[in-house]
Image (tube, rainbow, N blue to C red; front, side, top):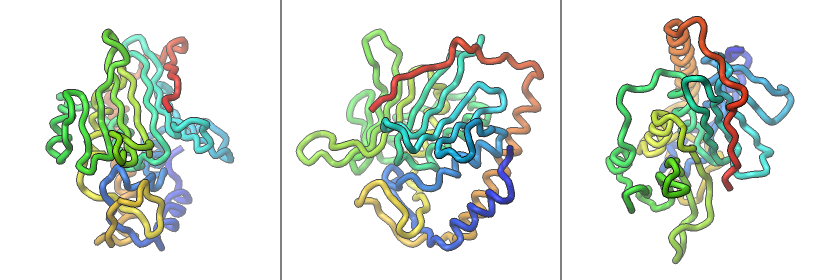
Length: 273
């Protein structure tokens, strides 16, 4: 079902009295409002397949190939899990994200899942370097504050490479301290989705968080935003309208008889802690 007027009103009521603060860097901004993700997918035609009274949310794409699971009672550090089933033409894949991943960053990825992929793949390390990140090795870059790390990692010499993102406490004498949140993409995750996530993560523009809203770390920088609560709500509504229109345009361009996902090829992955 699309996002209802009641759901939009609830979002507006939630933000109406929250004084927005510009919050940066993005990797320390905290989770924000998960409806940035769920409303966006619902506007694009994704449907909820779980009990509405359950804290767990599972959304499924119109073609039944993709599922996004949000589980705030997860026994692992992965609260968000995104899966794609295998088809005759494409492999299945899996990605997961920790509790404190910013909703806007993950939402940038889910937006990219809805829209057609770009013709050219971005050079992620060049994107990070342009944003002021430091490339420590050929396959790893660190944020300017040294707390977020993006790595192209292989599990073995012959294995395909998967992308790992971790935001960690300062090491205080060790290279990396305790983990704050993570993102993990298996080697078959489409490159343009990883590009969308990392590009949004490295964007120096602040995210908006309400006064006293949870952030990921005490070192985050906040200052009163020029945006009003009403503008925050209007931007959310405008984004949903754009995603709805984009999804309709994509569906019109697709063949009427699309191949169904192969049930036996549903991607499985062991949760990464």
